[in-house]
Every structure is written in C-alpha cells, then in structure tokens.
Image 1 (cartoon, rainbow, N blue to C red):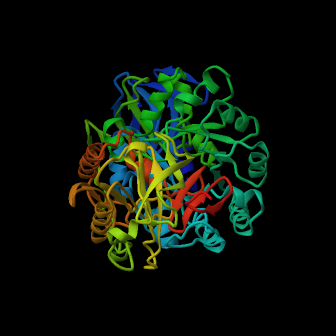
Image 2 (image 1 turned 180 degrees about the horizontal axis):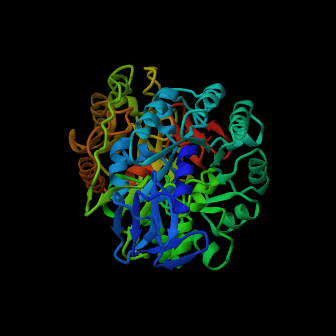
Image 3 (image 1 turned 30 degrees about the horizontal axis):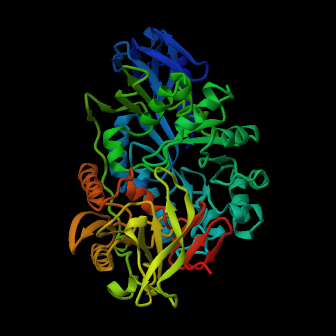
Length: 591
C-alpha cells in the first residue's frame, strides 16, 4: 500500500492552504505517539483519506468540508495488531472485522497458517482476498511452517519456498509468518533458509517464534534472519531479546497472558520501548465479546503501570515501523492514513468513534458502513476426511505388561502454551492400559483427517480433570488433525463421529448425548455464523467442559495446542508422542 502521487500533491496543497480539506476534526486532544505529548486544541485536516495538516484549520474549511466535533475526547491512532490468527477466533475475516473495529482495531497482521495446514496456499488466498474487501486493514504474513514439523506429523498441505516467494508479491502481504521450526532455522535447513532469504530480498519482515532458553539457539536464530518473537514469557527472556535487537512482541490472548510478567521490563527495568509491541496471537470469541480486542491488551498494560501513551505506542507506531509501514500508518501526522479513534478515557481505551481511511466506520454505538459478503468455495467445507467411522476399540492402548504399565504422559498447564513431561503407572486390564481418574489421567487420541489414512495415535494426558464423557476438536494446532480426549472410549467414538458429520468443530458429550458444540465447517476451523451466535455457542461449550469436571480457564484452547510439536515439551500428533525438546517421536510406554 502506497499513497499515490496525486494524493500526496493534494495533501501538500491542503497543507499550504491552496485547497480546502474534505474533513476537519475540532476540539480534540491529540495523542502524539512520536513525542509522547497530549496536544490540546489541535485541529486535524483530512483529504483523500489521509491527514494533510494539524493545527489551526480555520482557513481550510470550504462549503463541502465536513466538520467533526471531537467534544474534548482524546484522538489516538487506530490500533494495530502485529501478530494474530483470525482462525483462532473461530470467525471468518469478515465477522472478525465486525467484532474488532468497534473496539478500535483498524489494522491487523494476520498469519493464516491454520487454514494453510488444511488447504495450503489456496486457503491463504481465500482469507487474504476476503480481507482485502473490508474496511479493516488486513495485512497477511505468509505462513512459514506448513507443516510446522514435517518429521513429527502430517498436515493437509505443504507450502514450498517457491509458493512463499510468489505470495510475498501479493498486495498487502507484509512478511513471513512466525517461523516456528527454530531447529530447522538454526541448523540451516534449506527450506527454511530459502523462505527467510526470499522474505529479506522482498524487503519484508521475518516474524519469529522461539520458546527456547538456550542463548546459543536464540542468537543463531536471530543471526539467521528472524527479527521478532512473541513466545517470550519471562522478564529475563524479554531483556535478552531486546538487548540482541529482536523486536519483542508482548502477547495477551485468551489463554496465553504475558503482559503482567513482561510489563516490568518497561516500568522497572526502563528498557527502551521502540522495539516492542502488544499483540493478541490467539483470541476466542467470548474474549472479544466480554473484554474487547487489542484495546483490552493496551488497557491491561496500563493496569500494569505502563504509561498510557507508551502503551498506545506499543499498539500503533511501533507495529507500523516494524513492518515498514511507519510512513503511512501508526500515528497522527501529515501524510498518514486517517485511521483514528475518539476515546473518552485514555486508560479505558473504549472508542466511541472509529475512523479508517478518513471515513467514519463506527459511531453512535453502530456501524456506519456495510460489510461486503464473502463466500468460501464448497471445497472449504469438505475438509474432514477419515477412512471409516471411529469405534470405541480404536481408542484402546494395548500392552504386554501385566497389572500396571509405566507410560509417558502429557501434562497440560493452565493458561500456558507449553506442556510438561510426566510419567505415571497406570492399571492394565485384559492387556489394555486404562486411564486413571484418581490420578487425573485421561485418554487422548489424534486421528489423521486429511488423507483418509486411518492413522490413529493413542496416549494419555494429565491436567484437564475430566472424569466422565469426552471432547473432540478439529482445531488442533497446527496440522489440525482430529483430537479426542475422554474418560470413556464409547463417548470418545461418539464425539469423533459427530464432529466428522458436521465437517469439523468442537464438541462435548456424555453418555452418548451432546452437551454442547461449535460447528466449524470452514476448513474445520471457522464458523459460517455471526460473531454473536459463535460467542453463544462457545460459552455453552465452556460450561459443558465444566460439567465433565474440567476446572481450567479456556480449556478448549489449551486442548487445541496439545498437538503442537513446536512448543516444549511433550505433544501428541497423528504419528505418536512427540518430544519437542529432542524433536523426535518417543514410545508411549517407558521401558
């Protein structure tokens, strides 16, 4: 995106007083994210959707000029989310835009690697095209790791370096999506290095994802060309990354909440903030409905004693600068697009008016524009392909041991993307290893759902506190095979088969009855329903998890990451148990 020569000529003409403005905003308090000042009685002149002049604009008012009274509200740049996955909201890009523009988000940098793992570059193009027709500015970072770990799992597609190089030339593609395969990067894997090289040659950002603490790994990763990371969870990690010149993305999503731990690097360590930003990563619809979007993250930072203007910098100009759009977006200055918010209280960050491209999009508690419809092809709704219906015996784990068997168990952590390795002795009955509710150990299975291979891996998980029934989901980062977990194998089979019938989604069952479900027919990841309906369904789903005994916050999000073999330490994939620390498959039973 670039301002045309004619637009720049028109902006200069307005600034010189040779031409009248299209819109003038009066009586506001301008929040300057460059100088960190609050500027009173500064009027803003807008022409061709961009800011032309800031100051006394009385001489720029013509017969056709629209004059807006800010009524002493703060005027801030629109918020920019530098890393997020629309698919995690379970909404289409259009429905997501309806949910977040009113909260002050005017630009997103989405990484559609979830749909890419199901439909490849074709799926990325669907979401990218949908985003291009919306009032929300939708930038795409091309998924880098599809599949995320091809030696450990099977996804529905693969993105090759030449495809990534091609898509980097699409309009409003801003860079390479989070490079999760950090072992491949640091050890010079050809595929990863070609992707990074193509992105650097295109002059675009290489966004990162490295949860490892090893300083050698981190510095090798940075030296390989990756420039940011959102997997920072401790103050010490944050300081080290900032010292090494890495852009620090501070995450606050529905389940992964890092602002409280990382805010002290700003408030106490007094590190410069120019190379930091606030992002959401993964947000569920009920979070959008209850708390907001990026404005909630800014508000959370302020609550952790970050100065309000600094917090706004982290969600505006810093994001724009990182992706190379700082000369067009991210602040209120001449030559920038007029993406701005009217806010009554700078600490609450609840906009009453949202303007994008110089046009009022949201005002008086309602949208002032229509959102165009986007229709996904029928192919998008045919993504769950299994060899045959699941049977209860498919979920049984057999052994040659008698009485007890010692097994590797995945230990799920609340509000944390990581897992821990756990070992347990489980009872054996008739050659079958049984789960143990008293130890909080439940059956866990992953079924390949892209190629009808019939491949199923069975394991055990600790930490969900499920003591009856079963849950199933086709949201299983990042390959999105079919995940099933339960205390009863009959319910596990029932849950899996019901999800298959619906073409994907999430479900909770007990005694052969559906307690709650969220159908996700688009790639098995996104709903075709409005945000209000999806929010209601997810709320019912969360209640149903508690009926099975689960006490975790946002358990379905934690569950959806149990199959992600790029975040330590132990995961399940369709091929078996994946030890992320060694990047290898390990046996279920401990010898």
